[in-house]
Length: 279
Image (cartoon, rainbow, N blue to C red; front, top):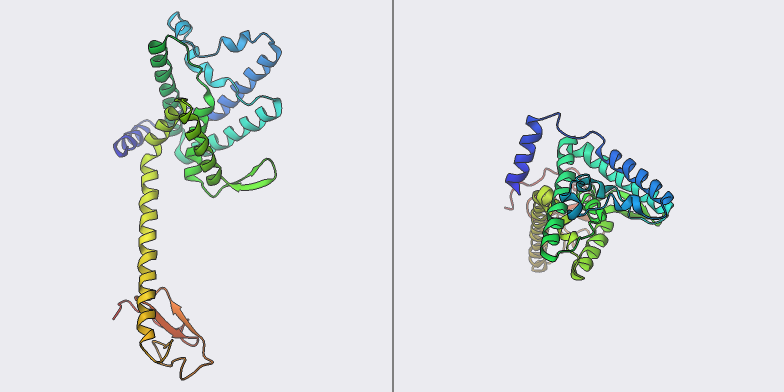
């Protein structure tokens, strides 16, 4: 994954003009147009000419390699409008964060993985799979949730929720769909892991370091408390030496910035020089 991302970065650096500006805006506009025409076409003939079909592609209808992406999956007009706006929001944000080149490669690679899966499924089973673009867009949503986990959205229009929690909910649905035999979510996840796997690994490493640091500090606290229990006092200022036995009305605090577990009276907690060693 690391070498793959380095290759992507080098390619984008060497070809700064590569990429489709406002790619997600084009996808959303195309989806809106397809939805409007499909609403007027009661027979469904128009949408059928856009769906993925290996047999028709091999007979020359190559536009089907791309047009299946524009078929909306939200149902009614209101949900379609909300869904398309949401996809535009996360897609345009990712493009600003990554640049047009990397975002274009991310979306195109997702399409290519879809097509590979579709043709393999067709040649193995003889049936044409329905390539639902929903999972492709959800892989984009997962990338957004990884990069901007604290972003808040309104669930059901009035419940504020952080995007990382929505990501966990969608991940649970992905597991459910995969358990039911749907392999398209796996195809979408492969694209996510290729482009964001290094970032995900970094998150786990930072989380492990944070837990180790927290555990080390807690151990020092326990050791300090065990040492204090052997003395006749509970708190002793590391600067002036006053204890809570001698001054029962004096407040004491502990400094997490000092090496070790250091106690200070209220007069020195904010004015002492931080200890750099545990001795």
